[in-house]
Length: 207
Image (cartoon, rainbow, N blue to C red):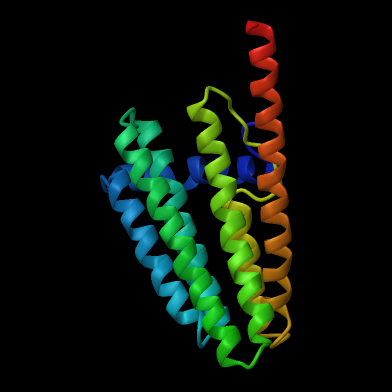
C-alpha cells in the first residue's frame, strides 16, 4: 500500500526543506505545535461563521502547525506513542471545530438547514472513519493508507471552499462540503474493504 498521495508527499517535502530548520533554530517542541494547531483550528471555526475567506486562511495556518508536529518529532528522533496519540485525538477535535463553524455559517446565511446539517454530519463521520479504519487496521496488524482524502487533502478542500465562498456566496461552501461528505465516506469504505481483504488473506495463509 502507498504511504501517502503525491500531494501529501510534495507537501511534506516542502516542510522538510523550508520550515523544519526554522523550528529547530527556536527549539519548538512537537507538543507545542500540536496544541497550537488545535487552537488555530478552533479560531478558524469561529471565524468561518462570519468570514469564510479569513477562516480558510486560519485553517491553513492550523493545518500547517498540525502537520509539523510529527515531522519535527521524527527529525529529532523524539517520536513517541504518547505524542502520536495526542496528535490523533486533537486532530479530530480540530476537524469538529472547523466543521461546526462552517455549519454556523451555512445556517446564518440561510442555506437549507437539513441539507447543510446532513452535509456536515456525513463529512464529519467520513473524516473520523477515514482515520479510524486506518488506526483499527494497524491495531490488527494491517496497514492501509489508500484513498483520496487524507487529512491534508480535506484541509485544502475546506480552505478552497472558504476562499471560493467569497466569490460564490451561498454555493461554494455547501457544494464542497457535500462533495467532502461523499469522498470521505468513499475513502473510508474503500479502506474498510481493503483491510478486510488483507485480514482474510492473512487468515487463509495461516490456516
